[in-house]
Amino acid sequence: MFDLKGKKALVTGGNSGIGFGIAKALVQAGVTVVIVGKDNKKNKNAISELKKINGTCNAVQFDLQNCRKIPAFFKSLLVKSGTFDILINCAGITVRKRADLLSIDEWEKVIAVNLTSCFVLTTQWAKSLIKKNQSGSCVIVLSLMSEVARPTTSAYGASKAALKQLVRSFAVDWGRFNIRVNGISPGYIKTELTEPLYTDSEFSAWVMKRTPLGRWGTPEDIGPLAVFLCSDAASFITGHTVFVDGGFLASL
Ligand SMILES: NC(=O)c1ccc[n+]([C@@H]2O[C@H](COP(=O)([O-])OP(=O)(O)OC[C@H]3O[C@@H](n4cnc5c(N)ncnc54)[C@H](OP(=O)(O)O)[C@@H]3O)[C@@H](O)[C@H]2O)c1
Image (cartoon, rainbow, N blue to C red; front, side, top):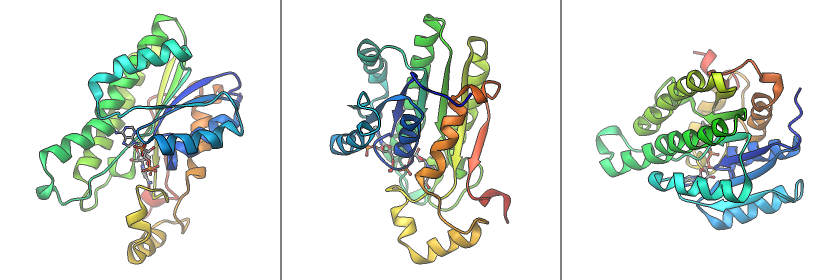
């Protein structure tokens, strides 16, 4: 039931951090993965690692901030690779500023990369499956900030909270086509995105004290859940978000 051999997946943000962790876990489960990233050097490094496990994996360079170009971009991917059984939306950014100091441009950039690109790409992906009467599974990577806030996270948190509702809306719209959509909400995970946080010894100590399991998470903590959610073992699970946070949200 956990077997994903022969499946194809598209993974945004697959060239680093959590997205790479998910891509690697999928490849280890037998999936052929295409990663989408903006930075070509990072794409090449990531894909050379994945190719060691499955030689047919590939990377494509695209800036997801260009939301209106996503339909044409996805169409070109379909021509090259055919339909994708699995879609992982993991690309994400933040601008850490107090809300009153955040410009409209900064707000719009975070919303475009984290939220609008996910809406456009996922609807294009679903259309391609519905047209072929094919089932599929999508995972959207959210955050603790869809539930709680901390200073300097207004745009990021708003995008993640909206994504959480999008998980439900997509699941409800596409259940009849056997297209499942679920969210993964990571706690504090050591990646490029959180480097300014885990290198701050005071903040890092707070995270470890606040997390019942007493440590930062790693991208390897997230991948196995994505494999489960995309497999037949999760065939009756849709519209839900699972937290992988070492117990963070459970503790006060
Ligand atoms: N780390 C955590 O503690 C944590 C916690 C909760 C949720 N998350 C979420 O997990 C996801 C991955 O973050 P991460 O921590 O793994 O950070 P990361 O290592 O910085 O990864 C971010 C990924 O997003 C891609 N990306 C960013 N802007 C893009 C754009 N305009 N076009 C295409 N790709 C773009 C990056 O690729 P390029 O560098 O090529 O642009 C990179 O692959 C994000 O959605 C983040 O919100 C992280």
